[in-house]
Structures are given as C-alpha cells and as structure tokens.
Amino acid sequence: MTLILKPGTSWSEAYARCRTVAPEAFGAEHLRNLAGGDWSDVGRTVPHLSPIDGMPMIGPSVVDAPVAVEAIAQACIAHRDWSRTTLERRRELVLEVLDLMATQRELLALLLVHEIGKPWRLALADVDRCLDGVRWYVDVVEDQLAAFGQPRVPLPGPVSNIASWNYPMSVQIHAELVQLLCGNAVVAKTPSQGGFHCLTLAHALMHRVGLPVTLLSGEGAQIGEALVRTPGIGAIAFVGGRATGRRAAISMADPHLRHIYEQEGLNTLGVWDYSDWDTLAAQITKSFEYAKQRCTAYPRFVVQRRLFPDFYEAYRRGMAGVRFGHPLAVAAADDPLPELTFGPVINAAKAARLRGQLEEALGGGAVPLHLGSLDDARLLPDQDAGAYSPPACVLAPAPSWSLQHSEPFGPLDSVVVVDSEAELIGAMNISNGSLVATISTDDLEFAEQLRTQIQAFKVGVNTLRSRGDRDEVFGGLGQSWNGAFVGGDLLVQALTYGPEGADEDLYGNYPARLVLPSR
Image (cartoon, rainbow, N blue to C red):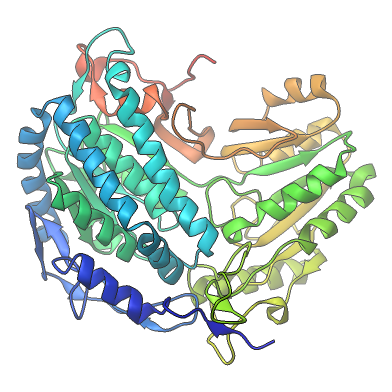
C-alpha cells in the first residue's frame, strides 16, 4: 500500500497558518523572541529539521546571555505591575487566552506533529490537557490561595521556566498559565531540540491578551545560567535530565529560592506472584505511547524468574498492538489520520544513539526478546526515516550497559529476572529514585509492603502511574526530583508566599530533608 501525506497538513501550510494567526511572532526566516513586551529579530538563526521526514523547518533565533539578562530585568518590572493585579482580573485574562487557544487547537496540535513527531491523537491530547487543566485551576484558585489558612501573595519576582521538548502544552504552557494565575510574570526558554513553534504560537496568544510573558530561544550553555542566577527571579521551574538539572541547581544564586526540578529516573514495573496477563499485555502496548519519550515511561521490567515464560507471552502480545510511523501518512486523501502508538523519536541523532545502545546491549550478552524493523513502519515512499527507531527489548543486559541505571527516553525496553524479594527491590531501585513505578502482583498485602521500599514517588499496584494533573500531587524521590512537590494546592503553594514568606515549610524533596504531603 502506497501512502500519501494527508492534504492540508504539510509543514509549509502549517507555517503559513501561523504567520496568518500571529505574524508578529513568526518571521519569514526565523521565529522571533518575546522580551520587554515586544517581539524582536534579535539573535542568530538556527535551522531545524522535522523528525517526521527530515524536511527543513523555519528555526528559532537564539540569543546570548546579555540579551537574556536584560529580558529578565524587564520581566521583573512587568512582574511588579502584574503582582498587584486583582485575582479577578488575572482569572479573566487567563480564561480569555484559553478561549483563544481553543480556537487554534488543531494548529497547535499540527505543530507538535511536525516539530516533535507526536501522533495526531497524542498531540490533540497534549493541547486538551493543558486547556482543561488550567480551567480547573481557574475555578478553584481562589480557594487554593486560602487553603493553608492565610491569604497567599505572588512571589517577589517572575518564574523562570526551563522545560523539556516533549510536552510543550500540557507541561510547559500549563505551568506558565498557573504561574500567571497566581500573580507571577513568566520567563520561558524554548527547548533546544523542538517544541518552539507550538510555544511561540501559544505565547503570541498569551501576549495578545496582555499576560506578562517572556519567551527566549537559546542554547543552555549560553543562557542557562542567566535563567537561574539573574537577580530578581522569584522561582525556577525545570524539567529535564539529571545532569542538566544538577548543574542548574548548583548554579542557583540563592539556595533558598523557590524551585521545582523534575528530573529523569528509571521507572520500573515489577512482576511477582502475578496471573492477570491480559491486563499486562494491554499495559505493555500503552507503555509505548509517544515512543516512551516521557518522564513517566516504563522502560525496565523486573520479573520473577518462574513467571518469565508467561511474562514473555504477554509482552509478545502487547508488542503486537504497537503501531508506529509517519503521523500524517494516509492511504487516501479523505482517510482520517492514523491511530499510531508513536512516530519518530525527537531527531536522527537520538535514533542513532538508541541503535548504538541496543547494539551495545546485544554485544554485551543480552538476549533479544523483540527487534522491531522499519519495514513495520507506516512511511511515505522514499521519505527520510533517520529519526525513526523501531521498538526493541533485551533480556538480561550486562551490568556495564550504559542504560543500566538511566532511562533510554525511547522505545528500547530491558528485562531482568530475579529470584527473591530482595533482588526485586534492588532491581526496581537501581536508578536511585524515580517518578513512578508499578508492582504487578496478585498478592495485594505484599504490594502494600513493597510500596514503602520502592524509591518512586507514585507506586501503582497493577496499574501504570502517570504525571497526573489538577488535584493530584506530583513529585519524585531520590535524584529524580529537587524542590517543591506540586499539583493542586501544593502547586499554588509553591508559586506563592504565605505570611511567613520564604521561611515557610514546603512539601518537597530537598537536599537536607524529604517532606511528604499527607495522603
């Protein structure tokens, strides 16, 4: 079957729509930066390739540290005025921009497809989770600001945001809108690997209604320190890898500055005294959504040795449900966009690294349980497929494997078998802290005992856990998190001050202490 690109979805058409909707932000040669209330062409143009087919895209204009420092100083001035704005007015403007974003829902999703390779269904879900989640906060924020017994006030300066590329709407824009709702101006850096087109359109709409937002493109090595050290910043919100997060945390000028550092962790699923293999097979299929390019993906399975034959059969059935390929490829012009589990990974370099890591595991003695092929992918004729990484799984990789203690952030699973409960716990805690974990077992009493010994913030029993939103607390244990826990009341608490100011005790994972919220 020969596939074609769905009419009306090409990159040139998508970018033309952006220039029509927000000509002030989308230039003919590059995306513009937003600072001091104005869009500008300052910076150096950087090219970008679409992961879905390798085609050139209009890239961002990256700035250097002095430009970032000046932009933050201007954001501090805007923050002073915004922090005095009434809650009623803040809610009104946030609702106005949510309505504007809803009118551009499909364009925002199409940008996510082109620039970070999300399948259409998942791209729409990313937009919808942002809009729905922020509307929830608009409805309850007044009560949240009084949830801790005293009226709360905005931070003394803007929130500086450094986010990953994989969820521009449901993580980054969602976070920024809640920050604004709480009375804080916003400074945001576009991720270097992608997501900047969607973020530019969203910020253009935010700026249009009068929200005090700053959006800068730049390399972390050039402007990262400015985003965490410039005087006047009220808080730092970071989503990314441990190495980058550690450098940012060390660079903070004030160790008492409000901060939320969400970092990577090797999330695991343990299988012990278990028999519901149909459920596990469905969970394995779902676990491959968006090529496991998310902080709550499950790339490691720890399996009781005697159950391995049943596990392998469930894994094989789960893999049969995985579909990957070009997110915009259809058989006929009037066909709907395909229902895919995932598209490409973020770029060709990442796909090459995953191939190398798979070969490393096999060369070190790991047993191949599943080796996918590009022949199984839905691709356009003769398209560039450099960023596509077929799903794969290895059994018993060597202890020296480069992914033994870290997440692949791609569709590459590993399985280890264990004989004792102590081995199960050790193997599930191999990365010194993670965001989520799951125990698959028929023995619920055993599961409850094990939960307290697993170094993950959310531990599911026979169910996959996710980042969550709205009123559910989210955080990480060990090296997967640094700073305040968030979600619902705790997110609003982290973004505001009570009467005690910076001395109040926040729930979170801090170097000197771990404070868990009551359940």
